[in-house]
Image (cartoon, rainbow, N blue to C red; front, side):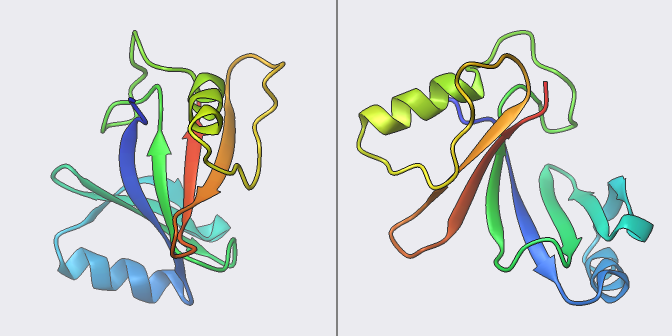
Length: 123
């Protein structure tokens, strides 16, 4: 199963403080808007998202259709197909993607410890 590029989306209290901290670890801003309280930061092939006030918990995130630099892939498994595959394996979908639509969509599952996993397709 190809889930897509992996990152961790962190729910932060103060995005400016978090940005400064992760910059000290070698991360640089890759995408986002600090005035909208979200940034995507990279350190080599490691990607984190900083999100202030957007969700409660940290989220494991996969992006089907993108490579590690957010460039579209020529071939990938569509998010709705991934959702169908996981359902067939008995995985409960917490928030479902509309399988009747085409293109960008997302769905959420949780692991056995309650950690949210977002499968978020942008292309």
